[in-house]
Structures are given as C-alpha cells and as structure tokens.
Image 1 (tube, helix red, strand yellow):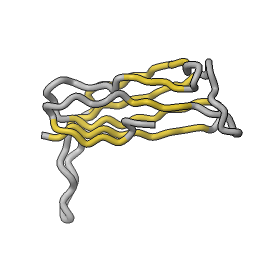
Image 2 (cartoon, rainbow, N blue to C red):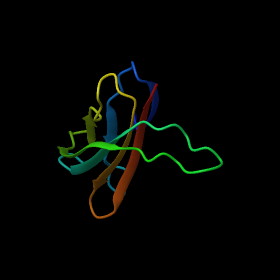
Image 3 (cartoon, rainbow, N blue to C red):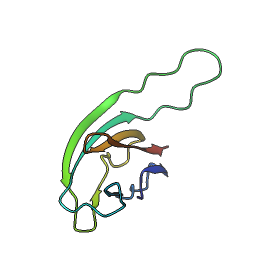
Image 4 (cartoon, rainbow, N blue to C red):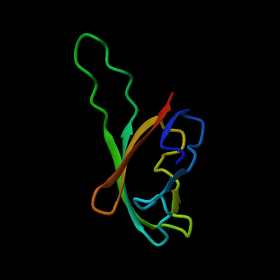
Length: 108
C-alpha cells in the first residue's frame, strides 16, 4: 500500500494510491473488484479549541470500480483540483468486509 495518507502543498501533485488485495492466506487476488469512493472538500484550517469549526464545502464526489492486476494490485490517481487547497477523504472496499480509508490533504 502507498499513497493512502498524504499531506502535501497546494502546488504539489498527489502520488497515486496503490493497494493490493490478498486472500486470507496472503495470496494475491487477481481479477478482484475494488470499489473506491472519494469526496473532495475545500481545505479548512484545524479547529480552534474554542468556538465552532468552519464547515468544509463538498466540491466533488466520485466512485471508481477497479479490477486487480495479476499481483492483486490496483492503482489510481486521487481526485484533485490543480492549484486548490483541498481535503480528500476516501474509502476502498472489496469483498464482503474489506475496507481501507485514505486521506489526502493539499494545504496552502
């Protein structure tokens, strides 16, 4: 796995998110289906200890359906807007119960 937690400057490009699907014995699962849900929000600074937090605006959502390669890997470019400070929240699922959360912050 790589790219599942990134904190980068607004001028940078996020690295691809790479995941590998394995069975319960650790064997790579070729031809498996992975569904990826992404929600891209406008960037908001961390909440102060007092008062209310600013609500981040939902900019875009996307769902991807990917098929694993022979080695069980899937790779995709995360949703982004060039030059915009954003927070991406994502979830990848496969099978009945396998879930992986990922997040990418592009800060000013």
